[in-house]
Image 1 (spheres, one colour):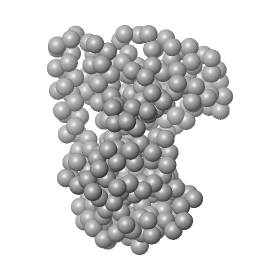
Image 2 (spheres, helix red, strand yellow; image 1 turned 60 degrees about the vertical axis):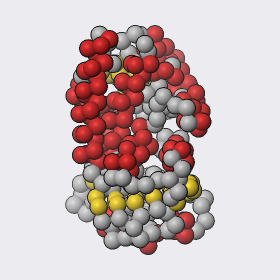
Image 3 (cartoon, one colour; image 1 turned 45 degrees about the horizontal axis):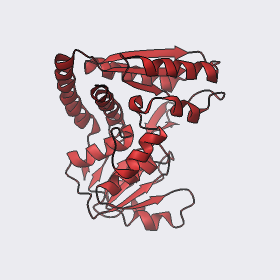
Image 4 (spheres, helix red, strand yellow; image 1 turned 90 degrees about the vertical axis):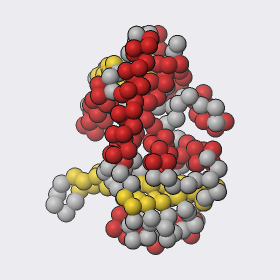
Length: 285
């Protein structure tokens, strides 16, 4: 079994991205800029935002983190987004989720200029992904595709099963595999006989947020298994641990390729965000 090293692939891509950013700045005098808006004080969100800022600095990009109190109104947040839409030094905008209850995430996504929507959640960008004519890709599905390519795992003509149908991962992941000529099945909580479907998969992507859902008896011998799950659980030692949707021990006995958690898909997500920000800066010209 080959362990897919997302950290190594991410570091390689970031090295290439850093060189691309430097060349872009030298040619245009413009530094790609990313604004991240954090509403409230969710501890996990703060870690993600800090990592995004660090990634920007590593690649030579401008990063601006805007922290708002948990009682920020919908109107105030939307006004901030409109202001960021008009700033020429900001090329990418994202609002870190989860947001407090009073915030309508759909309205927030719709307010972001599609040309600065580096998460690729805006309906216009979602539609372009459906047609295959896109500028940006959602960061996690894009990272999965990069991992498959880095390990020369063929997609065309293969049975691809995506477990999960979220707008952030499951649905766009299925579309990207379909664009690469995979034969795609999407499974979800209402799927009858889930194990029978997953056992057909040459490429199995688990993205449901249920620890250990995919076990060895649900996996085809020699399959490539991509674990997108990021679940925080309390272990027997009383400490918090990060685990995926795949039971690593049993699946590793069957799969030819497998991503670990952590260290698999996770490192790729921010790298794809940085790539989208550079793309947005280039498109701004």
